[in-house]
Image (cartoon, rainbow, N blue to C red; front, top):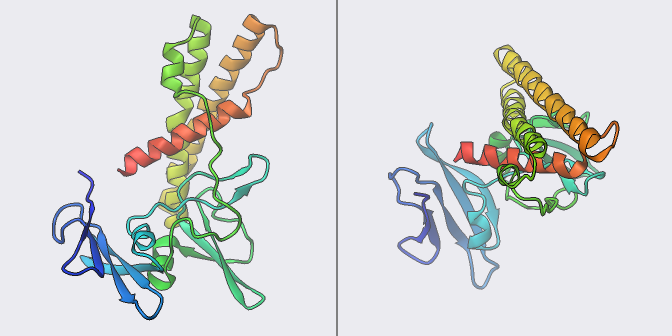
Length: 253
């Protein structure tokens, strides 16, 4: 059961669960108030070190709470898709520009963007500078909306065996894509030689699964719709991507 935010002994502190209990996440505390503007500091419980780590500050308790066990997404903007990369961020790229430090959260796949910028592990950056989810850095974080049903539901509702086989092939790409992003993120987080091979293997599994899905789709479009050389449309690629993100979220949970 996911821990809930509960108020502490006074109105200036909230805890994510009960201290010492399984799933305890940390707390937020108000450091200033009337007559000054409110300031809330967020502290996350580090289970490996058995201690609290400061992870951010915000003007409200609700916003500060988002920094504890927060979700941080890659902020590489995809101009051709109208949204940011939807995969989890693991590295913060930073630099100074006109005297102001800029920062961008990136996933494992995009860990090498912004040449010349410093690269800091996201957890290290949070404990040093603080980081609030959805705090605008470069552009908006907008997930592209999709009206398509889940792939498994679409396969069950398929009118023909050929159409169902296409959906099955598309579903076969979801897990390899999720695992590819996991290993890319893991390698970006821990750039060790022992993590290179799993990353390369994951890339091979994803490439073969995608090639099979592309072949099945092209065959279906040729035989049932008379279209030669059909390629997977962006809508289906985004659907695979969305389900890979959801798969990663379930695994983290």
